[in-house]
Length: 114
Image 1 (cartoon, rainbow, N blue to C red):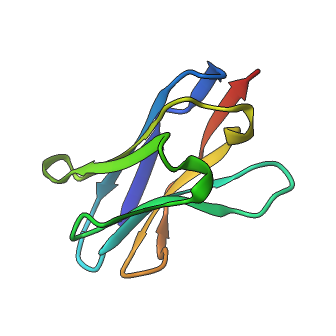
Image 2 (tube, helix red, strand yellow):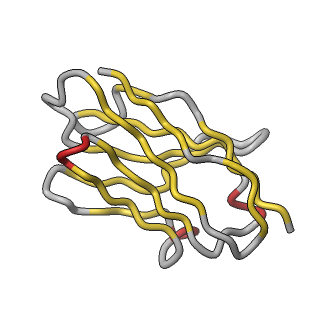
Image 3 (cartoon, rainbow, N blue to C red):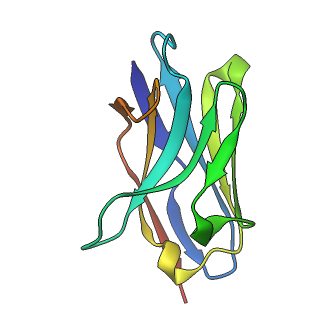
């Protein structure tokens, strides 16, 4: 299983970005797919996750601003990020697994300028 994340970049506060994570290889057991982020000198944290039943869960800090969704036909998950804030600046990682993250993609940098 390989996860390939893309879509990061530099954006002004209030702007939007969409991250993508393409999944290749067997999808067996990938019941939960998620986005995490890690800011400098901070621990990695869960941003959003989606189950195979399309149940979603979000960190309180991004509720109402971010949306996780997937395109099953393309084996891709997305993170739509709106109303971005400087505190959203971090490296974003996609992850997948039967429950907690087992497989990780490489990170993609998101930088929000004030």
